[in-house]
Amino acid sequence: MPLDPATVRRIARLARLRLEEAELERLEGELGSILAWVEQLDEVDVSEVAPMTGAVAMALKMREDVVSDGGDAEIVLGNAPERIGDFYAVPKVVE
Image 1 (cartoon, helix red, strand yellow):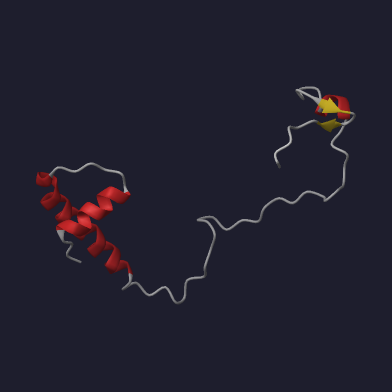
Image 2: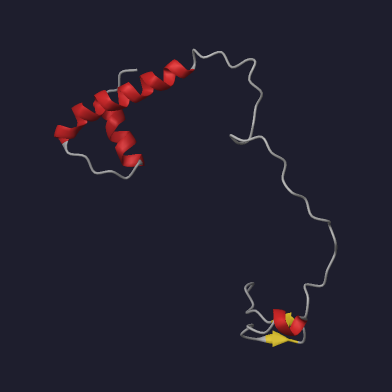
């Protein structure tokens, strides 16, 4: 896929890269090669490949779903800058 200098400039701006005019021609070729390689991937038949979320098929370890109080309130609130009873005190955010 051939790229023009305007497209290369736009890609560089989106990537927050500062390019000199001399670099544009070289990057046109490099980006074009990358896009051509990606286009080759469309030719691969993946109709028989099952979708997966990772490279290794495995099941996550599950823990028992138990309701708890978080332990001891004194320990949980020990580093709180301010507290009201067993709760964190936070500044008002709605005016």
